[in-house]
Length: 317
Image (cartoon, rainbow, N blue to C red):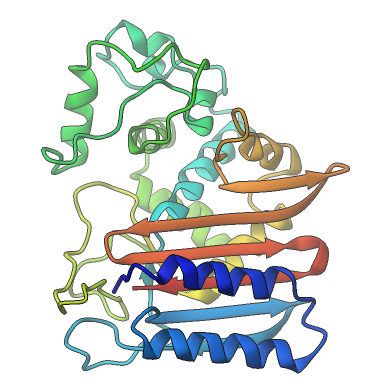
């Protein structure tokens, strides 16, 4: 459920958390008050989780899982995390790079056959920094991964020469996933479960759930109309707030990919968003990780200040 004032609420929440060391209980009282007020005003319906030095400082659920308002949201409820899901395809690629299965300088035409000549110009690394020159998906006609592939094969030209400019789009993400499938010989959703979710204990994370999947939140509008489950293309990730914490901590502790791979994913083009959202390194040390995502009536926020041992997650519908 989305309202125009939600971004103001997010900013207020962020300012409190970002500038807080959580040295005093008053800070959690203030957070709780803000969330309860936001819920009463219809600005927040979801889960919040805050961790300080591996201790849960605040954890709470607000609202209902869908427009019927028959089932309350719990800590077990899984939400669509919007664009944060893009981290998973990026990490999946680096798992294959570290395994010697592909190279960041490989052209995408090596893996996706029958692309026009521009396919030889786009390197895997361009997909990670949104500098491929690919346009966005044609949402009005896209009904499946096959439609995406057909659109790419019929694309006459790029928006710009690869590596020369920045354009944040979903075609880059789809191509990443196609490459993971081609190189690994495994469907992308199976790959992320076996190679990313399972090794770090993300036991409830799921890609592309169905309407019958248990503990799934359905985003809904202010007029109480449920969103449809996004099933047009592969790789839409639903997680709990605690699973998002496991994901974040695994990246910080280099459990899935090494430090050099994290640095590569954290590189941005002219200060724009990287494959991991917005990250900050200081003296070779990873300091902060900020990423937000939106999908229809879902929104999610991940912010971690690793130097302070502070992890914060908001997931709402």
